Image 1 (tube, helix red, strand yellow):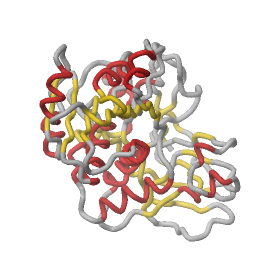
Image 2: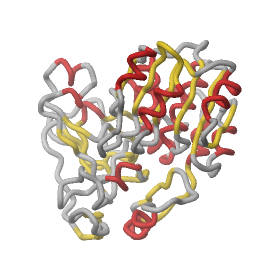
Image 3: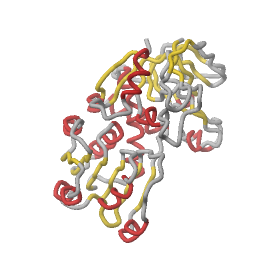
Length: 335
């Protein structure tokens, strides 16, 4: 099979022929139909990042496809099922795994592999796609699940005034769930207007460009300072700026995943008694929530898909994403 291999930071992915993996006990083999490019794929292959993928791995974790083979002991799934999956594995027995939260398992391992024709997944964390969902929809489930968890951890209510920093896929996912919750005031802020139309079409009540008088414009757009700020950029200094923009006794949710040192002063956050919540990924129920929302017809995130490319075009495309670009969610089609 063709697989995009990471050979070290600063080096483009290389397409190689690799054997189709055999599913082990409790695993399934998935023929990948679509895989989205995540911002972490760009960051964790960049030589400037302090955190990288393991050399020799195949990245790609936002995927959907069709089950091609079942490992020993797998039940409830069959060959031909259209599915998506959490791109991690766990022991399968601990309270975290049984609760659908393998990221909290001490044996958590990253499976990924979506930038290939086939990949393996742990059957316990595989979810079928209803007939109403396309493979592109299925590959959007993972980033939407990230937004679902961030919203869940925020404690938002329909009365919450929401500010989202960043209008990329993570910011748009947070917007989607804020509108699903019924929040009436949801402003997005970004350094450019390249995704402004997407944000407004997905239900944002205001789109703001970042500048020196942002706090005043946030208050004007929301009617008061933001109760909750979602930091979805992963840029240095963004948490401190979010603290500046949130209301007294408000909440800042960080899901942008910045790997660089953050210049953060606790004093302003302490004086405002801000709650700072970090959100990493999701649990299985967030996948189910995203699938159910799509199946119910809430398909606004389809607007996030800006381009579809072949697997052969992935290495060059990933390198091009290291500079500012006009797209949003790019889907890779292995075949």
